[in-house]
Length: 433
Image 1: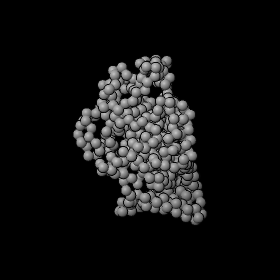
Image 2: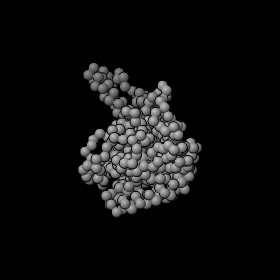
Image 3: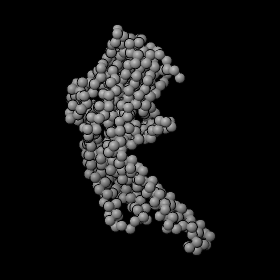
Image 4: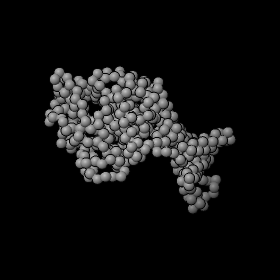
């Protein structure tokens, strides 16, 4: 509880400083009361939800909104604080200059009108993130974008020239709310009429049961050659049950049943073959493998590829993009935080067998960032942890696509990084520049 007292004191002191901006533009005590009541409500709601909770509570809808209220209210106030802090520095410098020059106070270049002007600019700037948070929470998380890529491969079997794949990732059903909005996203996926749908993990937040009320909605997904899936780090039950092996295994058993009810073919360190006119491509699926010690390491490329031919065309689903090019190979030890024993696993980019295309998710693009494709702008704070965090990458003739996610986690919204439906068309040949 001491931690929350310290946090509360710090936030309220900063809030009081930001409040000085409001005092320069209005003398309404009603407005002052609303300002402080909103701050106290947001802070109290956060303490109520996070001061004592179980492992899985941090990913519930109510906990997510408690976090959203905090960011939505206090991030704009930080902008007010920065403006006013800068203004106070200017005031202090001018006061020192005035004192050293023995000028009278009336000759000081500082005036209350200047402070009022700066306050108005600060409030205008603070309104931008505030409006962004509001939009992101109520509309941004449903602002589905269909992103299309055409990829060329010289060794693609001719029967698969023009083959289409729709990739979705990170549904996080425990966070979802509006069936109407989610159904719109499902309809948008079906409108692509792809040959196959590939789902790259994180069906739930913590427990398999979170998907029960969404079976009918996601069960409407359709694809000619089937729907394939892998598991992500949130699908194993660790966030709910810790390292309780029995509960984790039961959660996975239930999740496998959920996948079947959805019509998803769940691939666990294995492969599926899709055939056309006597030719075939392989859909490989590995269990979660993440470079971070905090994520499960159960994926095995060697198991998934043990029966593929030397000249096969291979598409891999691996939830965490760090699996593509993680370089540290000392993974044959038991890490108490990694949940599972890994034996001699390797990265995709240097793997002995050719993986033409890897599909991943996991990052969500942090659900926050700036993307303006026409200007070549693409940034999110998550890039400092995952260099390959969203979109298409090519390394040594191997492709990786990182989907930005269909759902959302913890923060119940998206700002600048919209939910993604990826459509990839495979073409035989060489891309013409």
